[in-house]
Image (cartoon, rainbow, N blue to C red; front, top):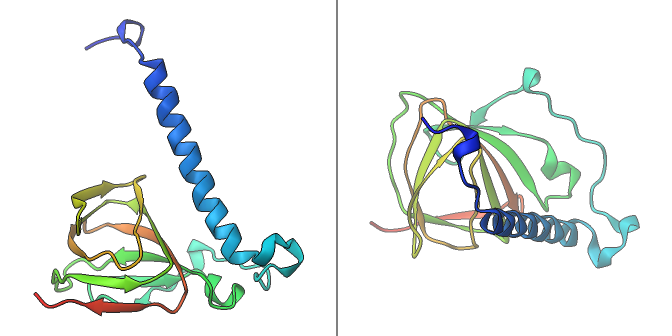
Length: 170
């Protein structure tokens, strides 16, 4: 095995990656701020109150897909329906069906908390995401869930909170 002292670090490439990642995080936070703070006026923020959701009190319920359970984090009520945030957990042994679909959203962000998640996106191909990976899904992009780990958990943040899902013909 190579020792750390023997490895060469491509600093320009590392700095470029950090710059892109930083810009991406700023873009996401800027978008969310524009959605939640109309006209940049902090006094008109659409968050109605302090929301706390502890894992120890978590209640997962049936949701959009029968092979996943959903935990609402309380964000929808606090943002007047502008944003929904939930943890989605795989239900081991539940019947799985891969069906192409799209969501009528303005913004969709997914972060893998645990396990792995595999999906195919129109024009982007197949991607497998592992714990710590995330993606932003453009509005109306056609996609298909191809698989996931039995212990898979993801955090999903979507605008608006009450969005439509369109199932596509095979």
